[in-house]
Image 1 (spheres, rainbow, N blue to C red):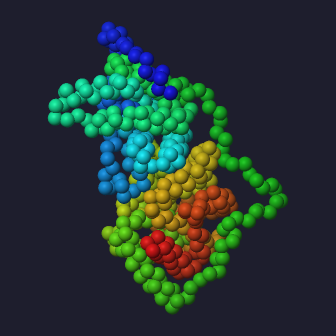
Image 2 (image 1 turned 90 degrees about the horizontal axis):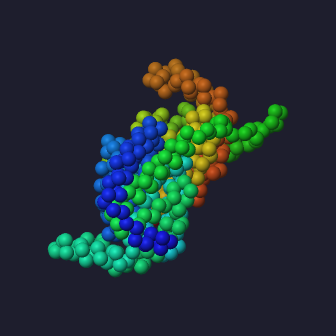
Image 3 (image 1 turned 120 degrees about the vertical axis):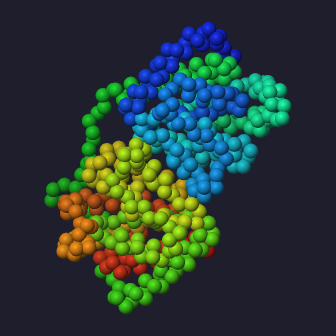
Length: 494
């Protein structure tokens, strides 16, 4: 693979100076157009140690408008990063729409180094590459332009640069350059596999010979410019009309098919005396499990979804009452802010993943993409259809890290919902809970039932199953949720 970039490309100073001015003008124009088109651009800087990647980053800073450019360097993981799934450190630094994020080091760095050092097996390495490919596909599907640059030098060139580095730095040379010079052949083999398995249409690799600095820099600029212009051309191309919502699968006169919600037994209830006893017992268990979770440095994420007026807020309060306030954070999810709309929809949820020993409770969640955004046509058909896989991948990363992930759907019937709506209208301190949208949403009840059924069918996995909670009786629902939380934490910490 690398033979074609070991041929000794060279550019004279005169050639460099003749190309540089117009290249910079074209890059700035393309950057402005992508900013106006609200396209996030991710430039990945990777390659052989000693190939001058730092100089390339400086050159791109010189040629681009730095007001819409941020460079992120990924060195060793911090304690804060190690306490969360690995991709948390990448999600929180992704560029907003209309800006450029230059990644000096990236999601490729650790898997490649781990494989070179034989800290992971070949199959584990391939699994990491598959996750990277899916991650990049997720970002590309959301409109991001990913430009992946690999800077290569031959083995003998690296050895020469190691000697030069020692002369320039009598006190010692770069530890990375010294290490990879010894492992060049292994690094080359591992890197070739990484490139081959992640070189895909929406995010191809660009391999650049870096022996000659001027050739390397001009080729980099042209490569970045071409990728930007191709993205702009694609944006200008006519697009087919929106496909709208999914095709109906029922016909006039045909009875509605049963959904998973029809199997929930809503007759279950607790009397007051039993409720108080069971509530105290369950909250005591959650209290103990919460501190055991803290001491064991385990994370926990709770997701609460359900019908309007199903009792999510009351259930969350009963959970948090059982916990020390230092151990948890509740995240209420409403319409996205401007900052959140400027990123992939999962970005705002990744930001709040808890550190080790803590818990995050989401009052509504990422499932809005396949529920309200689907039913109300806030998301296109292709967007919410691919979201099932994106969500499963996201949750798998959480549980692989050791996070205890619990997902609750609080289910009530239409009659109970109407009763609670009427109650909210008549009780002063509850009136803020009822809006015209709540009543309007009742007319879409069947659409939401179908969406919930598909959500459960496609995202209730062995690592993150759904718990469907009968909530016509609030007391029963609260105890059911608290008991489920206590059981899960106790089992995880056993």
